[in-house]
Length: 268
Image 1 (cartoon, rainbow, N blue to C red):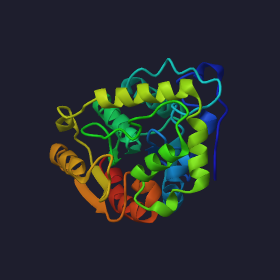
Image 2 (cartoon, rainbow, N blue to C red):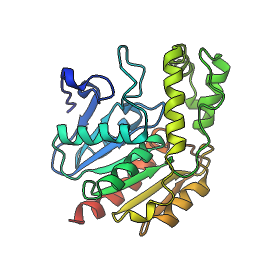
Image 3 (cartoon, helix red, strand yellow):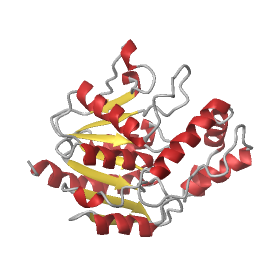
């Protein structure tokens, strides 16, 4: 079942639009999925559908999309973005969800774990920012060429067959908005500036790290460094996979996640 809620006026601007939250499944055990810079809830959908018979699975559209009328001056830092997710958890009355984040979403999840260590029940990182990341939008300018957009997507996904013309057209359309491009560059700088290297040792919760073996944005060594710095964490690589394993290899991602989740919900 897909549930959405209307957004009240006070949730305008950098607040998460509750009408853009994908909410599947039932029960007290909840996983909250957080997408990356160019991501959407749809990038989690296949993973979510494979888990929805056992868990409640939720994926919001983070307030970094080109939604018309969005006030973007409320997003100046990663802390601002993580605060919007914390507010969503409160709005939906979620009880200690597992946080699962890809790229920027991983950094947001880490930031929440550091700020509110008793809030999440577990953490899953996939191609996470926070240590080392080659910006996926380096060289971006307003109204880029389609070839630039195509090469940007190809740098994120290992499987060239997924770099479809409709996808290129969609991204190209988003990037014709000069103000939105400026906003994306600001988010990218905020991501670069939020290094969690010295804070990862604070994390004391079940943690799974899932990485694409061919990730060019956050190379495999970055996943290994996360594992080294987060006590008790486990690391799994998905072969023939780039920076977004949840999107590119959802079946394998879901299998790894499904094997890990009982550890989180048994840890009361």
